[in-house]
Image (spheres, rainbow, N blue to C red):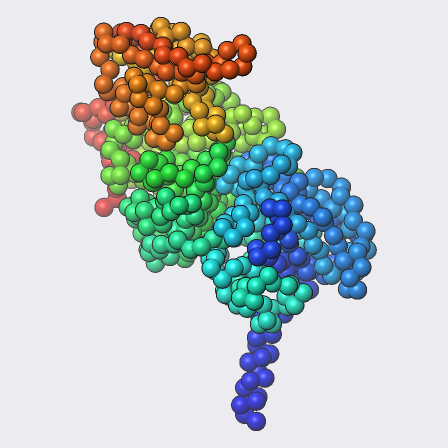
Length: 635
């Protein structure tokens, strides 16, 4: 009898673990059944008392600052009562479905197309925010592409089951409730008819919809590595056709960086687990990059050896990993209560993206991953981009607040001028504190004040920071972040003994094609002349035309990967007076292409360099204190 009582108690505990609270969503995603590049989603909804409700898929998600309209990938949306009868459903927009008699609703089903490979109308979704469905190979599950919510019910818990092939593994920053269970283990999935008897189920639980969207997953045959960082487990998971990139190679590329970031954050991390989810593709893609989340980051990159993209990957990884500081522990009400269909944008992108990008570069300078001269070179490139590609007099708070509608073309400046705001703010703080207090300290103080569960009011942040620091900082924000005055590079850099020149002209050898001359066709993987008007005198000597496709230089074929290194090698071999040849494919009037060799003798041209930075070799005591705080690791 005692054994029976123990058995019954165990059964009660087991069933309680899978009980369905009335306010809980329970989703099931079956990756073992793929039809026409689609998978089915089944939802057991929370209890709905109203006779009518609306189901939403997100229009936009945090971190992307662009409209995605995930609802356009949903097909065959149906709602059912407990007798299996369909309830009336009306599609009311790209992202919404009105359900009548919703107080009788017990189940919702629909099919989802992926965003990586589809014929759905609309703008392409940024790859790291997208979805992939490759039967038996790979599934990229950005939750916004698969799971929706009912109006006014985003704060409920979301439980979801993923049915998978036993050979597959789910990579995520989430800690699963259970993994690898069979379908007959009392999971409430009796209606699921597996294609094979050995299908397995992984089950996850998030506290609300924000938490669900903040945790992407990738399912594929596992290639994973682990790095221990300050007690936190950092997972690296890769999917690379042909195993061109292995997780151990990614680990080797970023391990030093992660250890430096740990020290930069004071020797500990605000998370216990973090995941680098890396999808490498052989498809032509329009965008490569990464998207941050509080406990993970998802990378979509071209499938090429890690040594050809290690610089780019490290830049992405450094930036995304620092997002464990903000918005995880420092964020406004607009982020804390994010509206996925009618979002209100914060005016503090200088903080979320700009300071994060500043950290990503500054940590590498402080911990010897790049030299101080190399770091100044990255700042120079950001200054050039901010002043030539973007509107440098646009108030950054306005750029942030209206990035979705008025200023979408200015959003990229968050990674350029946004980081430079971080540099100037750091130098100003250190000049006021004899080098002892900078943006690192400011962010640590903000994280301690607010943390994961408390948001600040958008209008109060500048005053809060001023109260924590110095009165002069309020003037800095008013003039250079809220105002339309360009950053005073010369004044700020001089605080650290860095000499600054707005421009300088030099006579030198050039390949003839300044920044902005090239274009790139990702589908054909071709480099072409996009703006012949920007060619300098040497470039014009070849007679290059808009649309010319560059295929070779001096008899050497231009590679499809590692183009930057190839150009550097060619540039290093150039000598005045020698012949130089571009091989191009040019389209004729009949549409056919002709291969041409265009040759000119090499000569020097006047090249203008913008935003020249150099370290003053004899800084005074005050400048040295600021420089050491800015560029030297804490002892």
